[in-house]
Length: 230
Image (cartoon, rainbow, N blue to C red):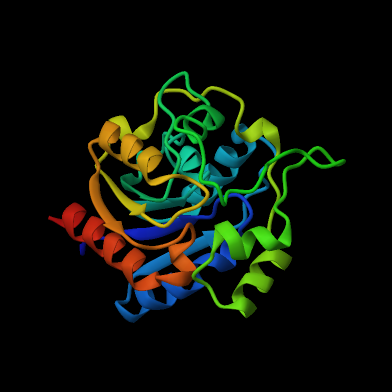
């Protein structure tokens, strides 16, 4: 019986949706790599992990989990034995007992970062101008407008609840440090990546390299795939 090749499951962060992975998906498909994307409800961290677990239950064989920004906490909170590696793309990685907000705010923020506060519906969204100034400043104007229109706001309940023992303590990890990230400072990213003992790749990219530098994201995923196949 032939060995089942890993499936790459990609999880979007706050203020994005699954379409933010499409350029990376196209590159992975050129290599005949199976991929799965889906949308998170971002109502609570528990809800998001439950949705991820439902997705993983439907995947046959091993999985490489990829998470952007907030989704770093989501992918590290699953306990699925299918997961063979974690890939963080400017990802947030709280440790046991920490919240997403705590690691997000650990070293302060870039002067271009937007002020985040819940709206009247209780969720936190980004103003349209933040996509040009901080979220995806390397994207085209058309892409920035599309991202702003498609953004998925996040509930404070996703980022204020302490996480349990993260999966990155048990499986190998890779981390793309976005050196031009105006949402999560490079210092914060490196702190988390170093703490996880991740395989680190650093590039002068913005907060959303899946859109603005998809080849670099795909290369990091290829590294994780190759390492877990040997």
